[in-house]
Image 1 (cartoon, rainbow, N blue to C red):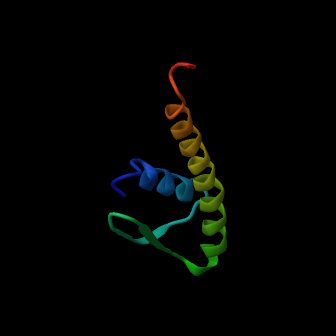
Image 2: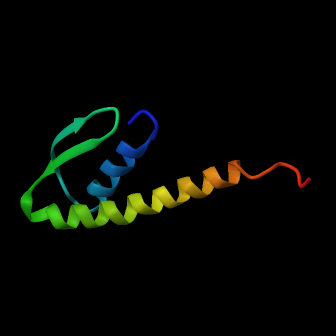
Length: 73
C-alpha cells in the first residue's frame, strides 16, 4: 500500500500478538489480503478493526494538524 507506509507491518504485528497465523498474503497497491484459519476469522477481523481504525483516526488527526493555518490573519 504505497500511500500508507507501515500498515502491513502493523497488521501482521497485531495478528501475531493475538497468536493468529497467516497462511497466505496477497497485496496490491491499494489493499492487503490475508488467509487465516477459519476458527480465527472473527478474532482477526475484530482485532484488525480495533487497531487499524485507531491508526486511521491518528492519521486523520495528524493530517488536520498539518492543514492548520500557520498564522492567524
